[in-house]
Amino acid sequence: MERQEALRAARERMGRLTKPPRSLGHLEEVALRLAALQGRVQPELGPGAVVVAAADHGVAAEGVSAYPQEVTYQMVLNFLRGGAAINRFAEVADCRVYVLDVGVKGELPHHPRLLGAKVREGTGNLAREAAMTLEEAERALQAGREAARRAIAEGATLLAAGDMGIGNTTAAAALTAALLGLPPERVVGRGTGVGEEGLKRKREAVAKALARLRPGMAPLEVAAEVGGLELLAIAGVYLEGYRAGLPLVLDGFPVSAGALLAWRLEPGLKENLFAGHLSREPGHRPILEALDLRPLLDLDLALGEGTGAVLAMPLLRAAARILHMATFEEAGVSDRL
Ligand SMILES: Cc1cc2ncn([C@H]3O[C@H](COP(=O)(O)O)[C@@H](O)[C@H]3O)c2cc1C
Ligand SMILES: O=C(O)c1cccnc1
Image 1: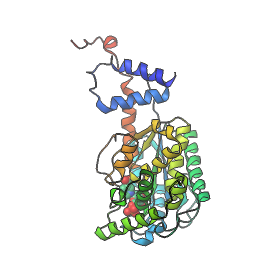
Image 2: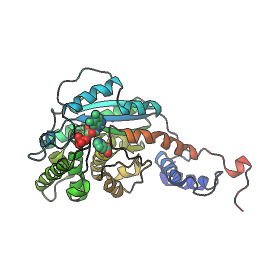
Image 3: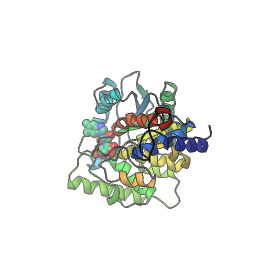
Image 4: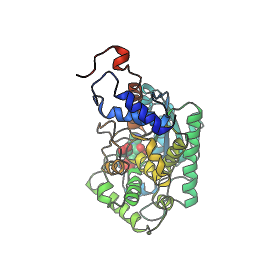
């Protein structure tokens, strides 16, 4: 069924379901969007997948994170062993976890769920130099696309990206500020929990990166300048998911910054996006506003890894089930007076 036709028919069915009008609130809008996306009045959602893209950041040398850089590598091992928050949440959300190395410092062991596509061992320090070359940016984007293709081939019907990279809330802030034309103060937050001094260093690092940008730069050139490699890969995951026509679930700040880039590269992609949650990071809200998205959850999360996206997957499935409810006529329930 064609999209507009499915949307019209789903709206009409929504009006006949055994519930007062609009009583399922925002979930009704989600249900209708899913119907339109799938071109069917009764949308079906099965297993999900999250591609957790990992890479290191040269800007970590500026003291912009509360944790040391090695945590990126160590957390990748934790993902592979199944001990991280994303693993625990994925278990209860019928979601597969794929880990994608696009730029982690150090050699990682072979593992069936680790997709190795290291472009370089961490970015350049965005406060002083370009994070990467345009060619490296393209390779990171491509790695994300390939990871998404694998997840879809293995049965994903709902797709999310996750992020891991110490220092990446600084890179995400620079990318968001550049793409939305916002000052550093609006988009820089505490990340893993830096203090006042750390916050100041983050703002300065972002301001220095922004000062190198020239008017008229293409979105991919901007992303190469400020990084990071996993943000490019995340953009690739969403671009490929869009190509396959899947519903795409956003996580928090770094993931949404990657999705913002994907949207700039492919404006139609907005139609497939669902905001899993609203992060505590201040830069997240302006991204969701620019994309005109309302978050499904607002739980004061500030972790990343794809956790907020995966938590929202059961809600998206529930929304799809709304259109499988009985109508007043089918159930023999009396309609509104
Ligand atoms: C143990 C641990 C697990 C994490 N999982 C995700 N992040 C999150 O925190 C990092 C970004 O914050 P910042 O810019 O302040 O470094 C990213 O790696 C992100 O995914 C973690 C951070 C830590 C410490
Ligand atoms: O919003 C997020 O996803 C987030 C916030 C802090 C650190 N890492 C990720």
